[in-house]
Amino acid sequence: LDYAHGIFDNFIELHGDRNFRDDGAVIGGIGWLGDQAVTVVGIQKGKNLQDNLSRNFGQPHPEGYRKALRLMKQAEKFNRPIVTFVDTPGAYPGLKAEKHGIGEAIARNLMEMSQLTVPIIVIVIGEGGSGGALALSVGDRMVMLENSVYSVLSPEGFASILWKDKDGSRVHEAAELMKLTANDLYEMKIIDKIIKEPRGGITKNREYVYKRLRIYLRNTLEELMKLSKTSLVNKRYNKFREMGRITND
Image 1: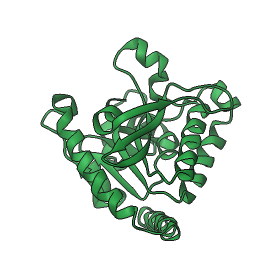
Image 2: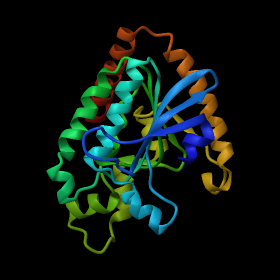
Image 3: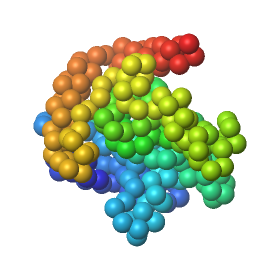
Image 4: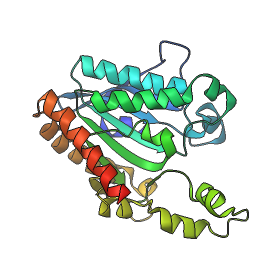
């Protein structure tokens, strides 16, 4: 919400997936970037214990991803570009989420986002973990804040699965192998740009980061909005095909 209000003018939050409930872990709505209306979708954590609990610590349920998709389909209908903000350790792994179809919700977002005929820009602002992050990360451009991470799972989970590490002694080694930093991913051409942060991180000077993101979004959306719908979708498809080739190599 800080990014939505800090970057966009007159942001209005919209609620609910129109099927079951509103998931506080995912926020979405409409804001203005200059004269351009933009649909904004992001994962919300919290700033205190009560907020974290109400937001489920930034771990979305299926309803959150379905809300996100509803808003993105609405954006396509009205030819509005989409900006997503990713900050999650992963989708909620609980029994209730499984019963409500978390796997299907993530998979559907991947499929639908790959075919949306409006520009999509993905911004990783903290941690991007597992399929929970990927469900909002299929876009034409992807950028990361300088101190953010993006990976298939946490280094703790990686060490536990690969080496049966129980005391955390190999977590640092796992993080090095996973190549999860913004610099690592930029070198591998997984992301398109790194957004610099002030010394000490974004909390030291939020406007510094907001300004850089506003400039990037304006310039990139102006470029993407000139493409035809067919060209936009084809370029997105080819981007991920190439990304798959790079990661496989």
